[in-house]
Every structure is written in structure tokens, then in C-alpha cells.
Image 1 (tube, rainbow, N blue to C red):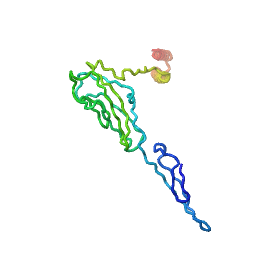
Image 2 (image 1 turned 60 degrees about the vertical axis):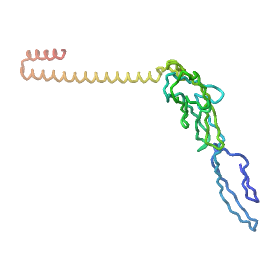
Image 3 (image 1 turned 180 degrees about the vertical axis):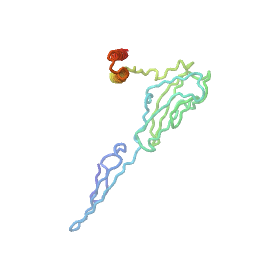
Length: 250
């Protein structure tokens, strides 16, 4: 990449450097005298690449650069300050060289539209009149802040329509992707339903066991009560037992 003159110490570049590829590098230089024995010293040289304005602005979608015409519609009833379009651009340079400004280069002396110097937004200056044209061709100039300044242009035809219902923007032509019920959603739904069913069955089983234990203990208490009251009267005890069993069946 570089070369150094062994006699003068001049460092010469053997190629051009691009700031966007790498910004700095370093190398070591050794200086040796002609004494006996020779003595030497080393030094590290840091090279910093400065940015040069070598990239022109690039206009971003949906608008293309000069060569093709873009179209935007506005209603005849548009008030002053009505938003028409927004031009966006980028510059591959860095620092001040990448600062962009927007201007309407055509038509000259236009009194119907204005553009934000730093935002790129095109808006109306005033209401439409019957003397205004139905189609207004505009040329937007995008310039960077480098020396010398580089620029790009984009052409837009602003068409005046009678009502907002006639306005067709680019967003209406974008196909809408229909959402489909994916397999993942189906599996998730099945898992939720399964867990819910298992939980419900477990809850029902727990309630049934609890009720059975409660009824059994209630029957045993009734039977014991019958034994305590009737003593050794086996006939009455048998009737009491049948009554307890009949209560359990109910």
C-alpha cells in the first residue's frame, strides 16, 4: 500500500484509499545509521484516512432517480400546506459530506409547491385556482454538503384531481397478505384444550372422591347412633342399617 524512500524517508502511497473501506492503519519504520556497529531506532506511523466527497446522493424507494417519472395525486380542494410527497435520500460519505439538502429545481419560480430543505417534504403553498395546470411536473434536486457538491435529481408529476376519492396512492397497489391459521397455532390450541380437559376431569374426580368419603363417614355415624340407641335389639338394628344404606343410595 505504501513505500518509503530509504534515503530521504519520504512515505509514498502506492494506491488510493477509500474512507468507507477503512479509516486508519499503521506501520513501523526503522532508521539505521552507517556506523560500526550500525545503530537503529524504530517508530510507529499511524495513517488516518480523511473522507472525500466521492459519493453522490442516492434517492430511496418508492421514487427513483432522474430518468423515470413518478406520479402523485392531490385533490383540487387541497388547502395550503397539504402534504404531497416525501423524498428520501442517503449518502455513503461521512460527516458533513453526507448532509443532504432538498430543492425544487424545476419549474423555476414555482409559487404552488415548496419543499422542506432538510426534510424533503413537498407541500402546497396555497389553494388551487382555475388558472392552475392540472399536471405539475416537478424536479427535485438532492445535494450533499461536500466540496465540490454532488447531487441527484428525481422527477415527480403532481396531478390535480377533483376529489379525494380519485386519489390512488402506491399503498393501494400493495397486495395484502392473507393471514393463515398456521400449524403452530393449531398445535397450541390443541395443547390448551387438552390441558383444560385434564384439569376439568381431575377436578371432577377429586370432588367425587371427597363426596364419597363424606357420605361414607355420615352413614357410619348414623349406624353407630342406631347401635347406641337400640343396643342388642337386632331387629331394630337391621332396620336402621337398611335406612342408612337407603340414604347412601339416594
